[in-house]
Length: 410
Ligand SMILES: *[C@@H]1O[C@H](CO)[C@@H](O)[C@H](O)[C@H]1NC(C)=O
Ligand SMILES: *[C@@H]1O[C@H](CO)[C@@H](O)[C@H](O)[C@H]1NC(C)=O
Ligand SMILES: *[C@@H]1O[C@H](CO)[C@@H](O)[C@H](O)[C@H]1NC(C)=O
Ligand SMILES: *[C@@H]1O[C@H](CO)[C@@H](O)[C@H](O)[C@H]1NC(C)=O
Ligand SMILES: *[C@@H]1O[C@H](CO)[C@@H](O)[C@H](O)[C@H]1NC(C)=O
Image (cartoon, rainbow, N blue to C red; front, side):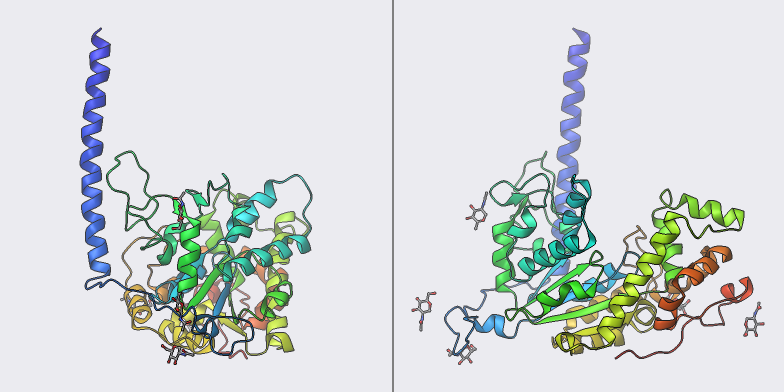
C-alpha cells in the first residue's frame, strides 16, 4: 500500500517538474525567436503562378531565376559551416542539410550488394527530386516510413532554417510529453507536403552533402533543363581531415592511434586503402570540375576549407558571386558573428569556432607518423590542392611555416 502511494507521489512530482521545465523551455524559445526576428512582419509570398510570360518549359517566373546550389564535400571539411552561408541567407532560400544520410543508411543496411555506380545514381535521383521540391524519392528512404507524408525522423531537420520556421513548423501548443523537433521552436513532426510547398515558394534552393563520391555521376542532374545548378566542391588538407576524424570518431579510428604508437602504418590495411580511395575520389572529382567539360562550364567552383577559414567573408562573397545570388546582409551578419569568437559550443558538428585558429589546430594533434602516411597515400590530391608536404616533426608544428600554397582555382 505504502509503495503505491509513493509511486503516485513520485509521478506527481515528476509531472510538476516536467511542466516547469517545459514552461522554461517555451519561454527561452520564445525569446530566441524574438531575438532572431525582432521586427517580423507577416509575409505574404508573391503569387507568380500565372506570371509566366513565354517560358517554353512552363516554369513560373519564380523558378526562372532560381538557382540550385549543391555543396559537395566530405566529412570534417567544414561543410556544416559553409552550408550555413546559404542556410542563413534569408527568406528566399530553401536549404537542406545532408538529406542523403537516409539513403546511405538504408542502402547500407539492405541485403543486396550495392555497386558504387548504382548508389551514385540513387543519390542523384534523390537530389534531383529535392531540387524540384519533390520529397517522394527521399521519402522511400526515411525510416520509419513517413505516415501521410509526415515524419518525425528527418535527419538534422533543425539544421535547416526553412524546416523550422512557419509555415513548415506548426507550433505545438502545450503537450508536455511532446518531443519537439526544432531547437528554436516547439515544432511537431515534419509534414513533407508543407516542406515541399515551402520549397516551391522560395527563390533559391541549396543542398549540402558529404555523400556524393563522383562528380561525373551528377551530369544528368546538371543537364536537367528544369534546374540551374551550381556545384561548390569543398576540400581540405587530408592530414587535417584525418586528425579531425580521429577526434570526432575516436573509437572508429582506434587502429590509427595504435599505428601512431607503433610508428608504422601498414599500407595494405583496409583503413589505409579507404583513405586512399577517398583522396582519389576527391581528386578525380576536382579534376573533372577543373577541366571544365562542356556540361559543367561555369557551374563548378572549388573552394579550400583553409581559405574560408582565413578569409571567410571574402570567400563567402566569392561563392555568392559564383552562384549568381545576391549576398544578403543576414548571411553577412551570421558570418561576422560566427568567425570572431573562440568561446561558444564546441560539439563535433559545431560551427562556432575561431575559424583561422581552428584551421591549424590539427598540426598539433596529428602524430607525425600519421601525417607522413597521409602524404604517401594522398600525395597527388595534396599536390593538386596546394597542400605542402612536411618532412620532419618540427616543420609540422612550427606555426610560422605555412603548409598552404597560395593557389587560385579556375
Ligand atoms: C491568376 O491565377 C489566379 C488563381 O491562381 C486566377 O484567379 C487569376 O484569374 C489568374 N490571372 C490571370 C491573369 O490569369
Ligand atoms: C510578372 O511579375 C513581375 C514582377 O511583379 C512584373 O514586373 C511583370 O510585368 C510580370 N509579368 C507578366 C507577364 O505579368
Ligand atoms: C500536411 O500538410 C498538408 C498541406 O497543408 C495538409 O493538407 C495535410 O493534411 C497535412 N498532413 C497531416 C497529416 O497533417
Ligand atoms: C582567432 O584566432 C586568430 C589566430 O590565432 C587570432 O589571431 C585572433 O585574434 C583570434 N580572434 C579572436 C576573436 O579570438
Ligand atoms: C620555425 O620556422 C621559422 C621559419 O623557418 C624559423 O625561423 C624558426 O626558427 C622555427 N621555429 C622553431 C621553434 O623551430
